[in-house]
Every structure is written in C-alpha cells, then in structure tokens.
Image 1 (tube, helix red, strand yellow):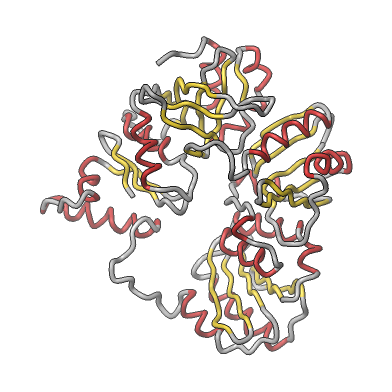
Image 2 (image 1 turned 45 degrees about the horizontal axis):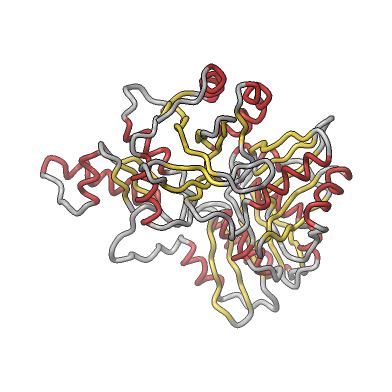
Amino acid sequence: MAADLGEGGVLLDTARPVAAFVSPTVLEYLAGRPPAVEHREQYARCLDGWRAAGLVADADGAPAGGDGLDGLRVRADEEAVQRPVLTVTMAKSCGFCAQLSADLAANAAVLRALEASVLLVEDGHERVLGAPLDRRTRVRLAELGRAAAKTGTPSALLCTPGRPARSRLGFLEVSAVLSELSGADPDVTVMEAPTTCSVNVAAKPVDALVAARVGGRRVGIAVRGAEALEAVRGVTGGGDEFGYTPATLTVERPGSMFLLFRGGELLARARNADALRAALGVVLAGYAPSGPAGLRLLAGAAVHEGGEAVLFPRNWVTDLVTHGTRLERGGWRVCLEPFSTVRPDSRGGLVLLSCSPEGSSAVSPVAGVLTQALERPGPLSRARLLAQVTNWIARPTTAGAVDTLAASLGELPVHAGTWRQAVAHLTGAAPQGR
C-alpha cells in the first residue's frame, strides 16, 4: 500500500518489512493516474524496482521458472522418504544464515529428539541433524539444496511421506518450518528477522535456551552463564519446554554487569540480578498480545522526567543505552519495551503508551522524532523523513494503521542526524514543545 505524506510518500508491504520512498509524480501512478508519455520510462523503472523488492506483483501471477523453488519442489516430490526431511541450504556469506546456525546450535537438544531429519547444506558440505538419513536420499536432496541456493539463502525444501514437497525461502519461513517439525506452534512463537549486530551477539555459544511463555506466546531467551540463567528462570519460572525456538533475547554477564540484548540491541545494563529481572520482566511484557491497543513501531523511545517523549531509530538503541547515564543526568530515560506503542491524540499528534519503570500504564505526548540523516547529497525533504518514520510500523499491519500513523505525524518536529547528535540534542536542552 502507499501512504501519502504530502510531497511524496512511502510504498510498503503490510506483511513484510519492505518499503520504498516514492516521489509525488510516482505517487500519482499508485493512485491509478496513468503516466504521461515522457514519464513512461521512469514508471517502468519504478515497477522494476518495486517488483524486485517484492512490493508489487504481476497481475497474471507468472509461474516461477524451472530453476526456482517451485521447480525444485517438483523434483523433490520424486523423493520417497520414510520420515519428514527438511533440506536447509545456507551460505557462509549470508548473515541470516549465520543467525540460523546460531539458533540451530542453541536448539541442539530439541533437534536431537526430532522424529525427522534436517539436512544442512552449506558451501559444499552437508550434515544431518535429528533422525539419520540414508546416503542415497542425502546425496539427492543435497543436490537439490545446492540448486535452491541460486534462488536465495537460507532456503528449505520439506519432503514428507505421502504429501507434496514444500519450499520455503528466508530466515523467518525456514525457522517456522523447524518450529513446526519440533511440535511447537510457529504462530505463537516470536520470530524476528536478524540484523548484522544481532548476528554478532548470537555468534558465541550459549549455555541454555529458555522458552518463556508470555500471554500465550513463546519467546526464546539465549543465556550465557550460571548467574544469568538463575536470574532468567526467576522471571520465567523455568521456561524449559520442548520445541524449536529462535533466540530473540540474549542475557549474559561478561563482566560486572548483566547485559540484556534484543537481537543486536543492548536494551539494558543491570548491576545486579534484581535489576536484570525487573528489566527482563518489562521487555517480556512487551511481547504479550494483550498489551495496550495502539500502533506498534520498530523504534526506540525516550521519556523525559517532564512527561514528554521522543522516538528514534531502532539501530540507535544500543548507543543511547550505553550513554544512558548521560541521558539520565539530562532527565531522560530510554524505554525498555521491544516496541514503541503509540496512538493518535485529540490534537492530531501522537502519544507514547506504557513506558514506565514500574510496569504501570503511562501516557507521554510525543514531542518529536530523531531520525537518521540520509546518506546522499541534497536537501532532506520532510516527506522523505516522514517516510522513514512511517516505515517503522511493525509488520504485519493493516492499511488503516499505516494511514493513521502517516496522518498523525502532522506537524511533529523531525530532526535528522546521527545518534551522537541526538544525545547532544537531548542533553543540551529541555524537550521541545509542539
């Protein structure tokens, strides 16, 4: 769908975190107005770019070629297997694959108990997890796996006795199949796409993987160290249960402090186990489906002691938490919640919901947005900056939610720069009013 932001807008997929900024002329194309003759070449380029990003699809739904995953699925249908076999293709150059490898290692006990086989194919090497696999089937499926790598990694082909083969592409889809094979419900298991930073955090071995239950959802917590594990179990009540669970949070104690990560974001540095338990409780509560009604944003937030809040990009969370003491001296507190939940207010702006260290309900008017300056020359249009903010909405979402967010941005001040400039801005003056 496309959201109009005045001088341009944002085209986004409400199911996946994919979006693009669109110019005023291109926005008219999306509204159904045919391009003028002199703009047809530009329109064609736009369509090609949107199609490549998965934002638009051909109306006739052209079938994939023989080298695509659909073609490979047909070839995989010819395999007679005695039990479910999932062939997962990865590449060492793929960051999503690195996160998947870390999750597989953390779920080693679950995979050993599988009544299915997982064949991992990576850069010419294969290994089998779960139930053993005969050589012929292993060789044949490894060949199909290597062919699947041409479409993208990680990818997977699931062969099940008496059923058509299924193909899956991408970290989230492959993780969902692994969860399903283990007997867990992928629909209630939290799965978040990794980032470069999250891969770095996940790279080291973990001592335990705790699956926490939060309002019917399952959240995986990777733990390093006995003290950290004891503190985590103090919040989750144990949380060890059968079922493949990707690691969404990580808790460790590399030195004098406990560290709590969400993917690659450092959410909290706790000086003792009690502080860690309090922080972890707030974060886990943020994943509960029964949280405050509003628009969930993949963005960070900070609240001033005067009551006003600012929003900032998710990739700044670690830096602002690291400089939390400086921000606290300026009266600011960085929120712990995994999402910044906002809703429109009566004045046409936004309010931030439930960012309280005690876990109680709170409402803070959003006084401004701090966002990343674009890495390109030329002036920054307000529409382009607002397109960044609109793209923060968490998927899956609805067209109505996107329109509501775009309309609520209104005259909200937006400051573009770096996280260092954001810290200086916040600590150098009191929060700006509307």
